[in-house]
Length: 202
Image 1 (cartoon, rainbow, N blue to C red):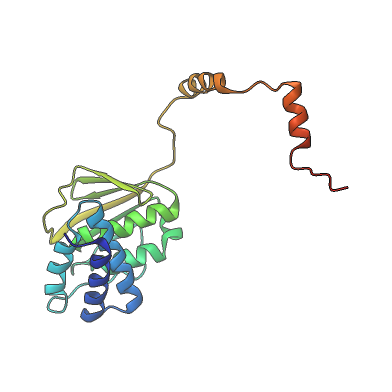
Image 2: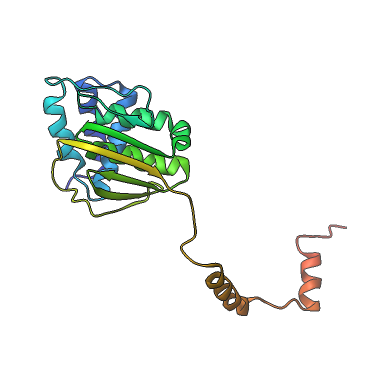
């Protein structure tokens, strides 16, 4: 089995060889490594994309808006890099749609990293397949990530508000139970605390 470090390094070099800058190649390496760590076929999709990258025309997204569409398939790497670069603007849009993007699996890790930067969970839909991205830590999905997906008709990206998954009453009940571990402050403890950290050198 290839190590994640080896995957990162090889992807970075391959990305540079095919025409990306060293800076962008480093980002691509990190993203493919993340996909593989999360059990999604990043290397397979990237390898397939690189086979057609210089043969087929792809559209770059320079400024991402609320609705993005093109008759020429969007480059997923360009879209991902620009999404990260424009993350503060993306949050204001709340929900974003992208139509006709090539190899959409390659977009996933960029959006996952954006979740960490924004501090919000992101719901990503790829042609009806849902992926919940949790602060670049995990992905919950009904998406089968082992296959190569050459194109997506529709992608929807939605920033989710941070909310607790429990009620206030449930929290109060749990907190009340935790109070049983609190140590009562005695006179002896007060005296020790009052002199803590002090030394007399005279």
